[in-house]
Figure 1 (cartoon, rainbow, N blue to C red):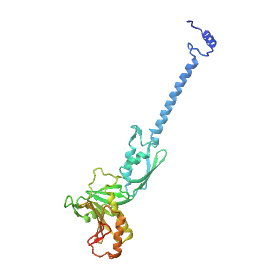
Figure 2 (cartoon, helix red, strand yellow; figure 1 turned 180 degrees about the horizontal axis):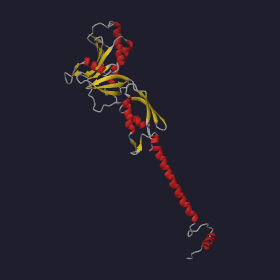
Figure 3 (cartoon, rainbow, N blue to C red; figure 1 turned 90 degrees about the vertical axis):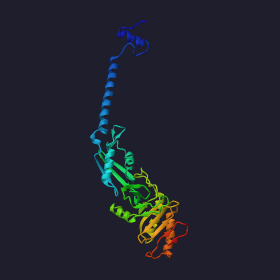
Figure 4 (cartoon, rainbow, N blue to C red; figure 1 turned 45 degrees about the horizontal axis):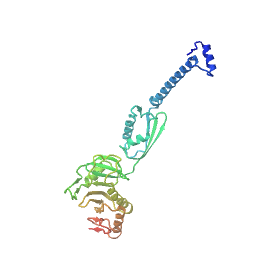
Length: 311
């Protein structure tokens, strides 16, 4: 094999083969181009790292200002505390959530919904470091006493708040078929002390309170409570009766709904029948047999079909 040692010989060899470069000859210009490429890539990497640090890790885009709007039933300090807790976390174990670019509205809504019941949450970002939170709370409909807790429910049965309650408002006289003793006076006094809104007080002496019942969860007995709630709504809208309380206790065949009025009437409802339908059964009675609301009545029983029993 013949080797071309001189530059001239190598050049002539390349031209003879219609080649403009030779594998045995490295141009100084090519070496410089490669060095320049590596240098440029290094500069780009440094610039990218610096820009990333500025956008995601510097204090310039750190959320330090916020405005919380729309709260009615919840304390602003409690919501603010939940926000601060969320901002102190990390995304993917190293990205700071308090950065306005990384702050994720869906993740924030998911966390705060485990502590508060909101209809919706809207987040607006104002760069570089401010957010505005607009909350719309669920409408609070009723308060339910169960064991030693008070559950404030929305109109769709979601728990909006949990408060400490009295433990002796109900005494069960028989384990299986109890009619029980209801201390309504203590319940109503307790609700006033806790400044609960003036909606009907529901006493649930039927269901066992689950250990994991938290805010935003649906109250387990809401289907039955809604029957009483629909009944009471129509009472308020279409009659002069005033409701004092609604209780659900154990009966031989299932839950028993007892409505108490301020004129000392007791009304029994069917726990499976529509509340509006049961109201109109009572409405006919009020327009015919019980026009005088001051009339002493021991009970009005609406549980048996179309019949209404009055004593």
